[in-house]
Picture 1 (tube, rainbow, N blue to C red):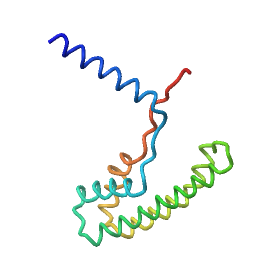
Picture 2: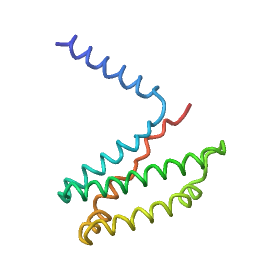
Picture 3: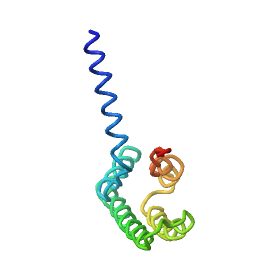
Length: 131
């Protein structure tokens, strides 16, 4: 029993070490992000196929445009400031919200804004600190 526990503990330590050395955060693809939104919207609102396709199209456009904007900002070679990133993304977010507001009934849009959207924002990975 001690050997099994020790083996499990050692395996866990190896996995932690390897994942800590693995580098940074891997950005999800547009399709993965849209699929995540699709699942949340479908479970929250039980939208019909046509409405889900419309929401998917809204988010596909938004994610592709935001990735393009991010790439343009990063092309300068130095990391853009948070303010510069927000300034570049603001019109894209406003356009997405306008389309969503038109696609969803008001009650569903309010639920999206208050409950679903806050949970969909990307979380920053914990910083590695002190090298």
